[in-house]
Length: 59
Image (tube, rainbow, N blue to C red; front, side):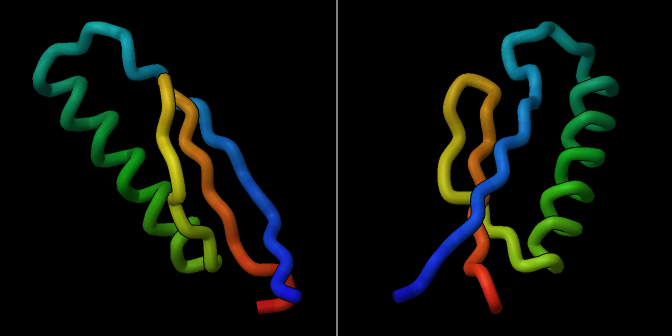
């Protein structure tokens, strides 16, 4: 039976940013998600600033 582990990232999404700030934050978040993807994490859900990721154990 496949087993998974989970990770939750909290990113404030209800704040007001300038376009430049938004682009910087988006770029940093993209880098973080890509790094986690290289570690085997997969984004499975987003809700109210919570980002839920999972990866298979033993993979």
